[in-house]
Image (cartoon, rainbow, N blue to C red; front, side, top):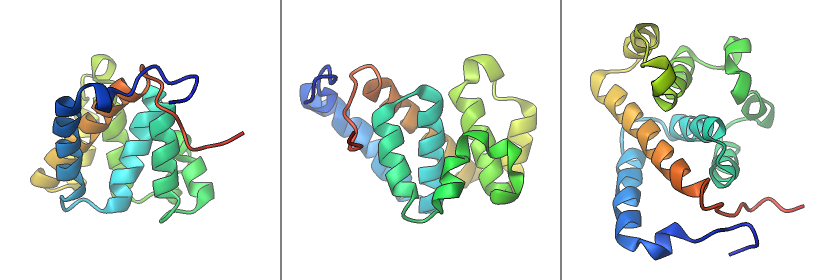
Length: 150
């Protein structure tokens, strides 16, 4: 642990970590493209302000996506030509579900995402979003470290 880490949640509660990582395993073995999963993981983490997850998923996404495109993810709506219709729908749905207490998962976002995802893939996408929200709600409060160095 570094000076900012509060505690290592997965060492303190290994059974809980195993359960949550089981959901992560499920998500990464769906029919969703790996790049899309990392895109959603990153956007959700940006919204939730989890430094560890932002660092991790930026690194993952940079393996398949250009850096200038990754840098524009927080403002994806302003550059729609950079992202496919499916990616835009997934990003919008990620924001709607992450901020569900404010958005109530709008009919507009649901219509957009259900138009480009089959029902099973839409459920898997929503599980992906829910899983990352759960990880963020552990990573941010316990200040998990990042790999980025000064």
